Length: 472
Image (cartoon, rainbow, N blue to C red; front, side, top):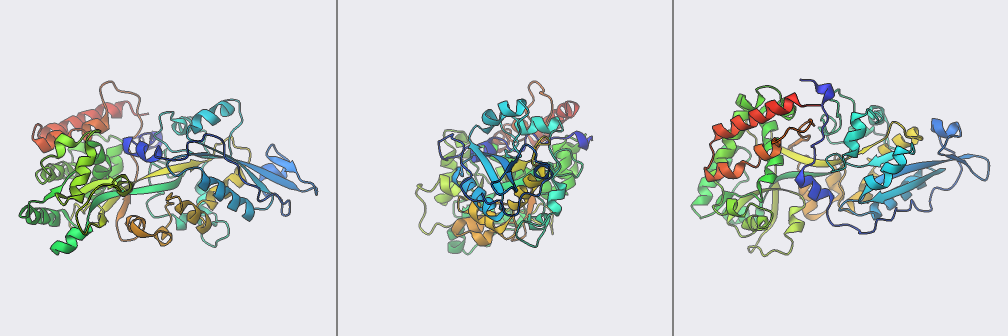
């Protein structure tokens, strides 16, 4: 396995695309960085500024001011939060002016200038997008390592960046794309995935929330007596996060990474077999109409099942309550959210999370201040600004800034769940092979009984073999 050649190009699949491309401001006008921070007192401290470089301009009193170019993708959280964060950064860094560009099609805006040699200093743009700009620069070794940023104190605070970030976020191909332990992507806004349920139903029935799969099966048998199914799912696409978490719970982080990098025989291993067999057994507890409605037209009917107390658990991300906010629901309904139960006795539950990334181009002119800006993203001040737009930073204790359901959702790691991140390594295209389609798309056939686990497992191993040979 050649880990140093691994790139996590498939980190965010269809579910992440819907997360990132959600509702937001429709304007595509670059946002202003605001009026603050124009004072020249205490000029810039970067090498570029000290040398009077391209991003350094003379102030009226003879000192240097710095211009920091920040480009950010406008996702479902909108653009206003970026303007507010930039204004706060400028206020806390006299002499620094941020030129902020925020756009829903950020690649189209910044790529022409980059080709001409004019790079932003900081870019917020996740992997997994169609234009693949982040992956392209990664393949070209055109990103600046951020490992030293992790050792910096958060601006205005006496704690290192690495010590504020939730454990697990810095030990993944989603931040260390070459698999060499060096961070190139700073983890940004995240969304944990898990199992949603009606907490009100548990109170009504006197049920305990299960922590293991043995407890899950016992609950399923008990609920069946009341005509309630244990499980449903919107579409098979939602089995990516579910399966990633279950794989990690079964064999740990190293095993999960081996699966993601197509290690020979990994899908025929004992730990992989546990996961295949578990999903088959879960199929026998799945609500009868699920498969028929597990498509892009009718998936909300499956999600409605837990609101109507016809099924107990549904895998999803933190956007589900917003998606179903106007749907009818049973009396006493309350959202509940839990990690995927532990596969092994004594193990921890796991929750896969999607997150976005920030990076610094190696060709950035103002690298020192760019690192300062990245470090500032984890400050209490920035975290609270982002949280107002429900853009949640992977900072320990972030739930302290949240209210209501969001506080519950983002407490999942504070409550002992293990964070799981990453995705299948990039490969050259292999005709007729789509790993997620084969791994997750087959679930309908397993639940309906049209395919056996043995057939499914063999097909996944065969696809893994083909992709391993094509791995970049």
